[in-house]
Amino acid sequence: MSEQLDAPIVIIGSGFAAYQLIKAIRRSDQTVTIQVFTADNGDDYNKPDLSHVMSKQQLASDLVRASGMEIARELNFELHANSYVDSIDPEQHKIKVVGKAYPYAKLVVATGSKAFVPPMSGKAIDRIVTLNSLQEYQAAEQELALAKRVLVIGGGLIGTELSMDLATAGKQVITVDPCDQLMANLLPEYIATQLRKQMQQLGVQFAMSNKVSSINSSEDCRALQVELANGESLIVDTVISAAGLLANTQLAQQAGLAVNRGIVVDNQLQTSVTDVYALGDCAEIGGKVSAYLQPALVCANALAKTLLGHETAVVLPAMLVKVKTPHYPIQLAGQAVHQVNRWQLDIDADGMSVQAFDSRDDLQGFVVAEQHMNKAFGLLKRLGKAAV
Image 1 (tube, helix red, strand yellow):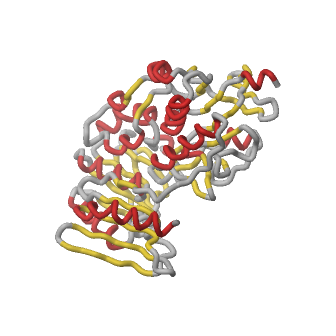
Image 2 (cartoon, helix red, strand yellow):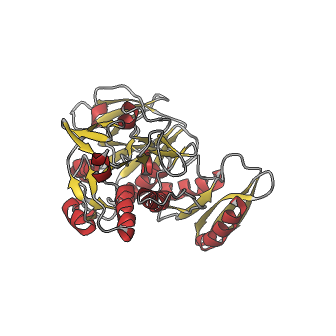
Image 3 (spheres, one colour):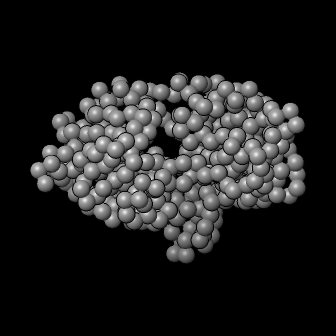
């Protein structure tokens, strides 16, 4: 028991959520011992910047704001870089890393998410590129720099941002998605149509209501031959999967923590096991997994207080999402697609706004594009009031 009392706060993972948590802890307590175990170098970088590295002609190294060692010194924590956690033992309050046990007083699982690669056949599926981390981009950056023809699997938020960025960088881009419109879960049809038109002007080609069925090497083995579900055959240099994210829950599942789409937590971010918490892309709060930065920041601030002995419930306000499509900028909040009773569309020469209302005629979501983005904060306030 005394070992637990003297044990540190242990965090598994070194992404945005983990480092925001440490910053929040350090604002209140500069001395509590914190250990971070991460499978990579622990470098601090802004993950959303990966969506526009090609058009900015950046290297992966350009995105690093501070090395793992630098941020560990700055925030006074013990960094175990390139250290894979083998298991969590909730009963003993320990984690195991390469056979060695490390005790914890409180454990935070911040293992993030991985890119989803849809099922497909072919002998070259191992050549599919994912760009969900600095390391993944670093491994692919030379191939991407040389590629002229790029196929992007996914027309959701990340796939759309990547497709526009690659086209802006001068690549020939084909975007494939099983839905019949871009960002089908986030954008009303009319705005999605305008976004598609802007991307087509940049040269992006679309294979909507379609899927990749197989990927094989071309005859010269340099390019890739991609077969689509509709029978169309394409020759490209690179295939990127940006078809969504899957929470990294395997470690939690093996430890007996409740897992659904993510690691299930209560409103204080505690898992089904005492003294074990989950934060960021891997956590499921109220049945939802959110991969946006703002919820991670709000959760980190609340969890810091809880870990320091002041139990604090997470209250997520209405939050604005900025879609990084600079040729057709969009901001959105709430739910403007599903379970909408009516839409209100406002279009003029400056852009457009769509407001979505529920059965009580309360605002439940909105999307603003181009110059109409100056309406976003006013609508966000209305949305926040409607949610109360």
